Length: 381
Image 1: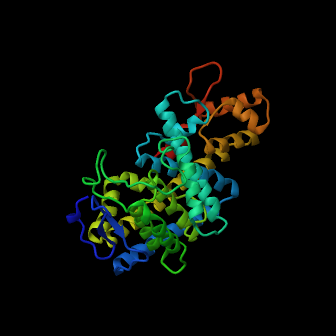
Image 2: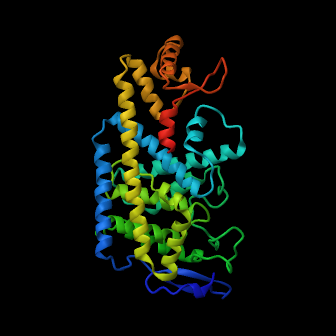
């Protein structure tokens, strides 16, 4: 790490290891005070209004409609957050993998990573739904789920790292990496401070979430999975703070689309105390993604309404809802879930196929798989 690149007064300081072999960045304890000008305050207020509009829209839905949405949105966040770390899984891959065994070992491994992320997110949300504090035990359990059976499974899942790491490009050393986090011995008390800060009720929720994300990535407490756990904690903090009641925000899309800027903004806080610039980027991300979520919800809701308004058969209507939970479907899925005969399920499929709602994609005479292209296209884009 190049010590000369660092000149902060607020965010922390560069220190040298006990043996003097490398330098590292040591963050100051939270909270950290920095100036927020009137323009930034207005942007924060706008973000709160936009997030409130999103939460209000979802809260007014029926339980069944919310269930369909939250499943889709948690899968979308899981896919996009994992993509930042290099997985190639798409929403199409994820939905399809529940119906067809993936034969490509690389893609199968990527799918598992994304499913693990969703499992960790669901677990975390189950904690904060009970209005519990976000604590170390919760985070470590989520980390274990995240790395189970995937890349990083040999890097201490569910435990803080016990070795020094460097953060930069592939092949970087402690000397060449742009950023070197604290040695392992510093992690427990820095994380104790982090948990105290995120559970404090006094700070502005959006500012606190932005600062907490920066600090988490700076402490870098795990050998692997720091980026994904850090983004998971954004969702948990916003949920616990009451910013939204249901997980329908996919913030990782903004970070993934602006990946270079995202990493650079975090580094510039450490190097030059650019808290205001990081906060501006973070608030822009929340506002952009809240607007995106509202738009996607409206498109999905209108399409579902149009399909159901044209439908008088109760089992066909139930099948349409199945497609919103997973756009891929087999005749056997319909028969099993609706508890109807295979011939009856076949007639439903033929009806939906005739109306252009689904299409068959295997070309086989048996074990056919159908996809609702319109729904899948909305979720992918």
